Image (cartoon, rainbow, N blue to C red; front, side, top):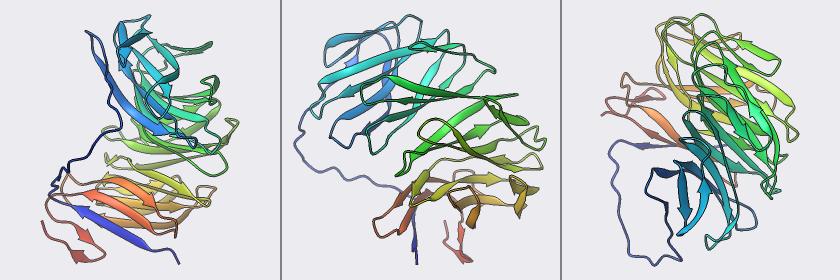
Length: 317
């Protein structure tokens, strides 16, 4: 039997201990640069992603050059931060690297939000709306294997990525509007003029579409997602719901008039195995992290304010 643990953080304190670093380095120039995502490979190398303007350096080596006002980069380094390869790509407007995950064969998956037509290697990505989601798979040498673009009638954003033991990749995010489309596969959301809905898509290692799921509210509600984890064919994802109407997961009604945290457990086809809801009226409450232990215990970290009702227990403020 799988065990569930919930870790609740209301007031967070940070203790700092004296430790020696193996190395430090700086990415930067006279312009604006940042690292927004990172991951480690199974062979001990490191992957970093971020953004920059015009030119940037890595450990004082000027290796990034932008063809546009702002671009994004992916860099692979050894464990000491020495560059192995790097890539820069972008378009005519703002882009951000949101998430990076690595599979068991050291292939790299990257989710990117972008606002304009986008170029990555020989791939041209057309912008359909103001904010779009891009999913990219690269091999260990940095060669782009495939890309997926998410289009909607309004904005959509990536929130998180996860990859399983088979190399299948899962992406969740937020969509405004009445539909979201991945290539020829469209998923329609009930009219929701003032709120957000959450999408969850699966692709196999070759980029073939697996499934698409939409979590939405019928009555101007807001549904967001953040943490995502997969293991042994099971999927866990979570976020916040604020709704006065019925809440649906595709065509299945799962709650009504709810405000608080949701945690969904799905099988490998995206069907619900278990759903949990923890009520709070505070808009500052959200899930931050999911971890699946080796014994398949599931740990959730949440931040909350005000009062949180957990399994009919009032945890206070």
